Image (cartoon, rainbow, N blue to C red; front, side):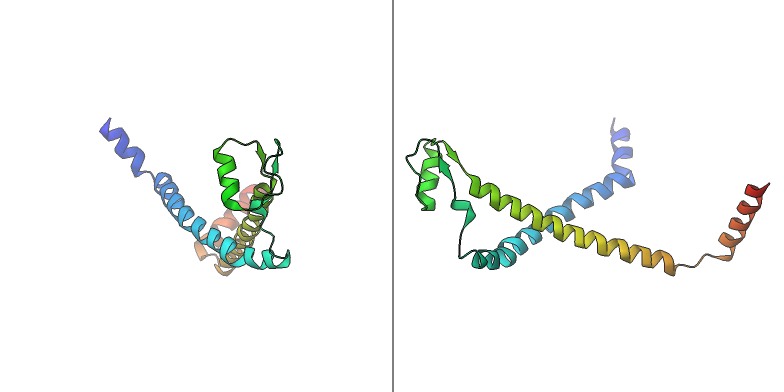
Length: 139
Protein backbone atom coordinates (compact mmCIF):
# COMPACT_ATOMS: atom_id res chain seq x y z
CA UNK A 1 0.00 0.00 0.00
CA UNK A 2 2.80 2.43 0.91
CA UNK A 3 4.56 1.57 -2.37
CA UNK A 4 1.40 2.29 -4.38
CA UNK A 5 0.91 5.59 -2.59
CA UNK A 6 4.55 6.55 -3.21
CA UNK A 7 4.18 5.76 -6.92
CA UNK A 8 0.96 7.77 -7.10
CA UNK A 9 2.46 10.79 -5.34
CA UNK A 10 5.64 10.60 -7.43
CA UNK A 11 3.78 11.12 -10.69
CA UNK A 12 4.51 14.38 -12.42
CA UNK A 13 0.85 15.29 -12.99
CA UNK A 14 0.02 14.98 -9.27
CA UNK A 15 2.81 17.41 -8.44
CA UNK A 16 1.71 19.75 -11.22
CA UNK A 17 -1.86 19.65 -9.89
CA UNK A 18 -0.70 20.43 -6.34
CA UNK A 19 1.37 23.35 -7.58
CA UNK A 20 -1.58 24.58 -9.66
CA UNK A 21 -3.90 24.52 -6.65
CA UNK A 22 -1.46 26.48 -4.48
CA UNK A 23 -0.72 29.03 -7.21
CA UNK A 24 -4.45 29.30 -7.97
CA UNK A 25 -5.26 30.06 -4.34
CA UNK A 26 -2.60 32.77 -4.22
CA UNK A 27 -3.75 34.16 -7.58
CA UNK A 28 -7.35 34.21 -6.34
CA UNK A 29 -6.39 36.57 -3.52
CA UNK A 30 -4.60 38.86 -5.97
CA UNK A 31 -7.58 38.95 -8.33
CA UNK A 32 -10.02 39.52 -5.45
CA UNK A 33 -7.93 42.45 -4.22
CA UNK A 34 -7.71 43.83 -7.75
CA UNK A 35 -11.47 43.63 -8.24
CA UNK A 36 -12.59 44.83 -4.79
CA UNK A 37 -9.83 47.38 -4.17
CA UNK A 38 -9.10 48.82 -7.60
CA UNK A 39 -11.86 48.07 -10.10
CA UNK A 40 -15.06 48.23 -8.02
CA UNK A 41 -14.42 51.65 -6.37
CA UNK A 42 -14.42 53.51 -9.72
CA UNK A 43 -17.44 51.43 -10.75
CA UNK A 44 -19.19 52.51 -7.55
CA UNK A 45 -18.22 56.11 -8.27
CA UNK A 46 -19.67 55.83 -11.79
CA UNK A 47 -22.95 54.56 -10.34
CA UNK A 48 -23.09 57.44 -7.83
CA UNK A 49 -21.90 55.32 -4.92
CA UNK A 50 -24.52 52.61 -5.22
CA UNK A 51 -23.44 49.54 -3.28
CA UNK A 52 -25.21 46.66 -4.94
CA UNK A 53 -24.59 44.37 -1.96
CA UNK A 54 -27.22 46.28 0.04
CA UNK A 55 -30.01 45.95 -2.55
CA UNK A 56 -32.70 43.42 -1.71
CA UNK A 57 -36.41 42.80 -1.67
CA UNK A 58 -38.10 41.53 1.49
CA UNK A 59 -40.92 39.16 0.65
CA UNK A 60 -42.59 39.89 3.98
CA UNK A 61 -42.41 43.65 3.35
CA UNK A 62 -40.99 44.34 6.80
CA UNK A 63 -37.52 45.51 5.71
CA UNK A 64 -38.20 47.01 2.28
CA UNK A 65 -36.59 50.41 1.88
CA UNK A 66 -33.95 49.73 4.56
CA UNK A 67 -30.37 50.24 3.40
CA UNK A 68 -28.45 49.88 6.66
CA UNK A 69 -26.12 46.84 6.32
CA UNK A 70 -26.47 46.04 10.04
CA UNK A 71 -30.25 45.85 9.77
CA UNK A 72 -29.91 43.65 6.70
CA UNK A 73 -27.58 41.28 8.58
CA UNK A 74 -30.05 41.14 11.47
CA UNK A 75 -32.88 40.43 9.04
CA UNK A 76 -30.89 37.57 7.50
CA UNK A 77 -30.05 36.13 10.92
CA UNK A 78 -33.68 36.48 11.93
CA UNK A 79 -34.76 34.41 8.94
CA UNK A 80 -36.45 37.19 6.97
CA UNK A 81 -37.26 36.09 3.41
CA UNK A 82 -34.91 38.42 1.53
CA UNK A 83 -34.31 38.26 -2.21
CA UNK A 84 -30.77 39.64 -2.31
CA UNK A 85 -30.64 40.63 -5.97
CA UNK A 86 -27.96 43.25 -5.28
CA UNK A 87 -25.51 40.63 -4.04
CA UNK A 88 -26.23 38.64 -7.20
CA UNK A 89 -25.57 41.69 -9.40
CA UNK A 90 -22.34 42.36 -7.52
CA UNK A 91 -21.19 38.75 -7.87
CA UNK A 92 -22.00 38.72 -11.60
CA UNK A 93 -19.96 41.91 -12.10
CA UNK A 94 -17.04 40.44 -10.15
CA UNK A 95 -17.30 37.20 -12.15
CA UNK A 96 -17.25 39.06 -15.47
CA UNK A 97 -14.26 41.15 -14.42
CA UNK A 98 -12.33 38.11 -13.17
CA UNK A 99 -13.22 36.20 -16.33
CA UNK A 100 -11.99 39.07 -18.50
CA UNK A 101 -8.71 39.32 -16.56
CA UNK A 102 -8.12 35.58 -16.86
CA UNK A 103 -8.94 35.79 -20.57
CA UNK A 104 -6.32 38.53 -21.03
CA UNK A 105 -3.72 36.50 -19.14
CA UNK A 106 -4.50 33.33 -21.13
CA UNK A 107 -4.37 35.22 -24.42
CA UNK A 108 -1.03 36.78 -23.52
CA UNK A 109 0.37 33.41 -22.45
CA UNK A 110 -0.80 31.79 -25.70
CA UNK A 111 0.89 34.50 -27.77
CA UNK A 112 4.06 34.14 -25.72
CA UNK A 113 4.18 30.35 -26.15
CA UNK A 114 3.53 30.67 -29.90
CA UNK A 115 6.40 33.17 -30.04
CA UNK A 116 8.67 30.68 -28.26
CA UNK A 117 7.65 27.89 -30.65
CA UNK A 118 8.32 30.07 -33.69
CA UNK A 119 11.66 31.12 -32.26
CA UNK A 120 12.85 27.53 -31.74
CA UNK A 121 14.36 26.40 -35.06
CA UNK A 122 14.44 22.69 -35.81
CA UNK A 123 17.72 20.89 -35.28
CA UNK A 124 19.44 19.14 -38.21
CA UNK A 125 18.24 15.80 -36.80
CA UNK A 126 14.63 17.02 -36.74
CA UNK A 127 14.94 18.29 -40.32
CA UNK A 128 16.35 14.93 -41.47
CA UNK A 129 13.61 13.01 -39.66
CA UNK A 130 10.95 15.24 -41.22
CA UNK A 131 12.41 14.58 -44.69
CA UNK A 132 12.43 10.82 -44.05
CA UNK A 133 8.82 11.02 -42.85
CA UNK A 134 7.78 12.92 -45.97
CA UNK A 135 9.52 10.41 -48.26
CA UNK A 136 7.80 7.52 -46.47
CA UNK A 137 4.41 9.26 -46.78
CA UNK A 138 4.85 9.62 -50.54
CA UNK A 139 5.59 5.90 -51.09
